[in-house]
Length: 270
Image 1: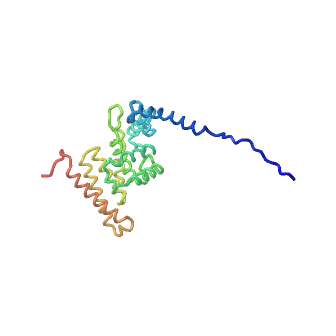
Image 2: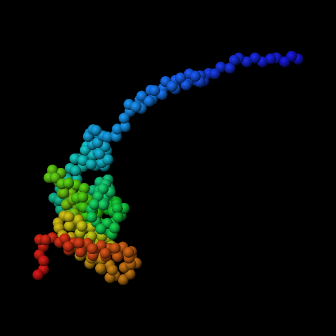
Image 3: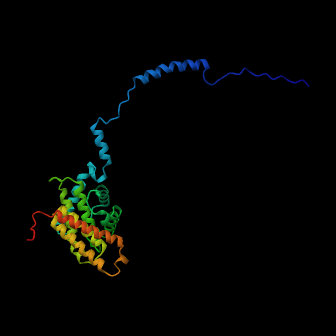
């Protein structure tokens, strides 16, 4: 048997250009790259259009403050305030999205003794509870009602600049009035920690709305309620003793501050 010889075609390279050709093209590209790099300039990026900057600012606003909805929302709130005032009724709590934004945006500015009165999370939880159970009046929780309405009044004052056309101060005054109308129920109820917190929050809000003398009266009321709690046997069983101590220190400190800044128009005893 003869063995057949195998023959193969010549091997051809099918991928890419030859070595010499590749080097030639690379040499041609280098001057082009150097030319483009030499003409490039490194300038800081800046927004030259005020319209673009304004659009970025508007995009960060919550929906209820957006230009297309702000006027309608403001008129709706003011109509509700006017109706409640004309009937001597409570004003309903603001919608959830507005309340949450106010708490987040103003919590560091509203000057509450917040480490004692309520944390941000506690305030949000109290708002949720009140809106869920009774958004139009104190219901069974007058102390919580006073606390959250005083907070709304402070938050609105902290985040608005009033003008006669917008009547934004009317909103703060309406929620302060909400809290004022329920104060009697808080003072006549059984002493509790939430009552002390509500009276302290109301003292802060009242100092902004009406002056130092009323704030001092409310602070003294908070002190009396706290003393009643501490005088009860086993008061520490139902209320955290550390919380009571913090409240005691806050009431005393706030009372001293109100005395130092007392309204100069009040008469001093002779």
